[in-house]
Length: 92
Image (cartoon, rainbow, N blue to C red; front, side, top):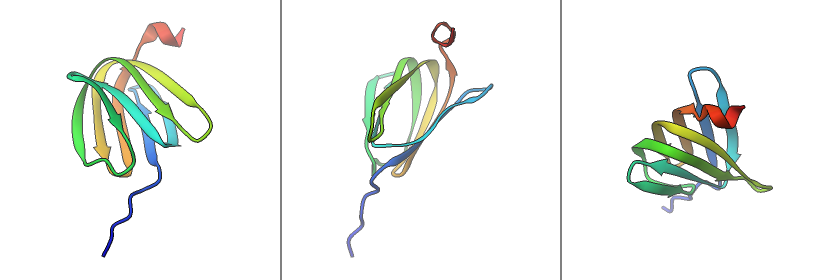
């Protein structure tokens, strides 16, 4: 019996005020406290503390990013859920 990997990830980036990102993506890069962590569909489950930096993600059409200043991410093979506070300077 073979297990197939998902083709995309559901990325949600949530703050206390709003949902910043809610998309199906091909890959995600998050700023952990130990450095940048790349996540592709099928990644094993983990919980990661975030540092200040940029969450970069790519869907089939383009690359996008969100600047954050901490929080945490919950990674599953088919999804990435990020709880954070946005960098207020970027929102202006």
